[in-house]
Length: 138
Image (cartoon, rainbow, N blue to C red):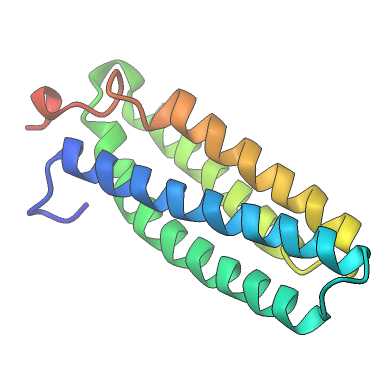
């Protein structure tokens, strides 16, 4: 975690990144729909998917650096449990990233739905003020 950021600031940064990813997902979904309807050339869709992959990669790098230190401040989780949670979480990132190169618009919509579900789960279980709190930082 960046030493100059409090857990609350880190949570806010991650929340902004999630909002940006959701906007990108929505644009990709709309472009995929337009492409299938014959209203859009594939080039714009490919550019947006590439931009989403770049943003997702940058978010993952930021989050993966921050996640362990943030969660280790939560005493009830324990170091072994945190290590396993982060390892599983990083593998989820890798799996979604591998899938974010679909051959069809239908496949794209499926991986976009998976990414949206992943973001929702992060926010529900990891990136909450119950888990990431400034008063726990030591």
